Picture (tube, one colour):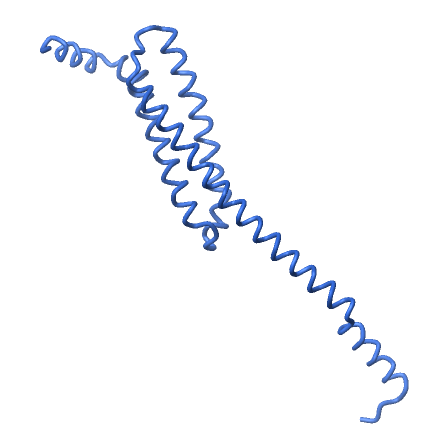
Length: 155
């Protein structure tokens, strides 16, 4: 093919536009910035999951300790019930968070931290349930109270 002057002009303009050093440098910089942002977001997600895991374990420990508190005093019982309710709200928010980050985790990002976090949240749910049973459900059960009275009589 014989190139005419307009074709040469169009070709060189198009080629220069694509391989322009300024444009290429800008694209490379944008790509580096994108990779950097993604890396920072992944690190933040890992840190957040680690903090959330520690918080869930701490709350679970406190709730487990509250299970053994004498709740026969009405004020103490009310306080524990309030703590159960606020813990349940927090637990439900954490379950929503799990659903929110699950698609990212399914791609292998922060998977190790997520497994530990999810286990801690499951333990939290169990601690809430145990405390609710010890303070609310079981004391209202006639069968439980009868069994406790029988045990007391054996001592």
